[in-house]
Length: 124
Image (tube, rainbow, N blue to C red; front, side, top):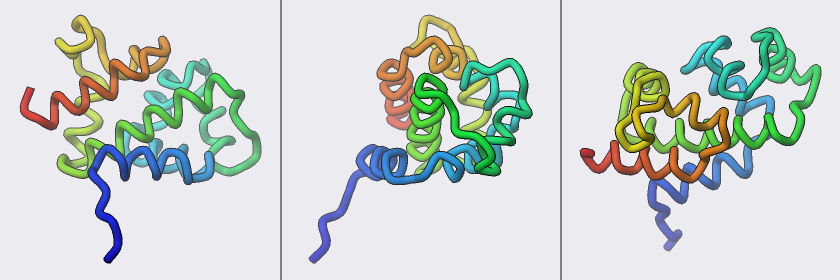
């Protein structure tokens, strides 16, 4: 019998195993290109479009932010709609000292964002 994974484990696996172009396309679909560029830490949203098309690869620090956002998004989508997930990324979050998860990822607070997403799903 195959071992069942929890939503956090499955989100992590998807973030690790997916190629970066697929990660970017998935994030663009739900978050939009401007928000995605903000999270990644680039000023030009067209950069994200080039990553999604496979024309360019993001730098390591951008890829780290993208994969954290993707893992968080996958975790949220396991129980919430894409509309709710996008709103969660944009909203001021009490778990993050009233900063948005998008800004927190941009600033490198990856662990805190994942903890906040899990708290949100748990009803907090």
